[in-house]
Image 1 (cartoon, one colour):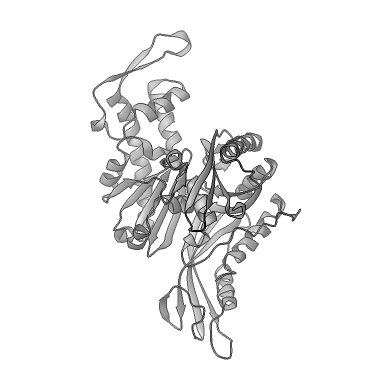
Image 2 (tube, helix red, strand yellow; image 1 turned 90 degrees about the vertical axis):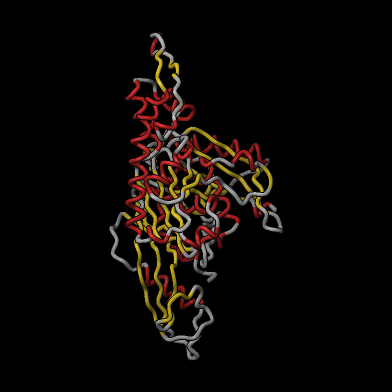
Length: 420
């Protein structure tokens, strides 16, 4: 069983979350441990203080280890930040086998061909996700291995990020005493936990509102079609409350979580008492006033998400509407406001597909990424038609450090397609 224990680590702007899970012979997922620590070392999803991030990682993983009764060595870590970009690419190869049968090596060669695109030196490929294969002009092929053909093409979705951002995450994990088993884009991780397969088939947009970043992913035909990360999220709402009401940041966060509403008309007609600063008399603020501060910022986040969904070209294909997740989606009325602004169905997404263990403890939108990372680790085939592998970093390899990350990411990308 120990071989099937996985630790997912969501290093966010406001919190570090570690989730330890396992699966049994019937592929049922059991959550063994959860650890949460405050995060002070990130800004808008990017590491800005190594030491603070390391202490947050250690605290979260140690808490999860104590709860689970296991020792964690390797982690699957999420990456976000507004440096993440994605684009479509296309590749083509000819089949040189005598009998014209397409082999795994041909697919490997084709997917490598799709990565030969002009990119700045400071960027590296994080994920290559096939959209469809085309054999001799016949499109819509999910898995071409074993088919006969002369010409093999593929449309792929390529996700890139800053090499330095990935290196810094890698260094933080390494300094904390653990190894990176895989680096996964956070909206991709969240999607594994909160989206139904039916929704991915008919078309759905995932909007993960975190502390520092809002992650967007668009799915259709069981494939990810568009990804984006924007640097406007929950912390901006807290800042607005802090400035608007003249309160401490901790008080602003508490007001947002406990009394906040995304729509002013949903706020009850009552007042909240706020302790005064430095011994001053307490303030009294109406909940409708608080909602009037919160609403414009959530509207801005949703409007930016709407622009990204439109940019994907799939806005008319999203029959399942949108799913909101992340800690920022917990503000009362966010789903109703999203339905109004985006003009489609909206629901709050909570982690699902868990059968035992600490299910209640993680059934909260803020744990979506952490749970999604462990689900991905236990079921690598969740990405769709392409099995991903999480064993590409050799634990005994002393060179598997941050300086070799560029090489390792390339190797990992190749490893993902070895089992096609």
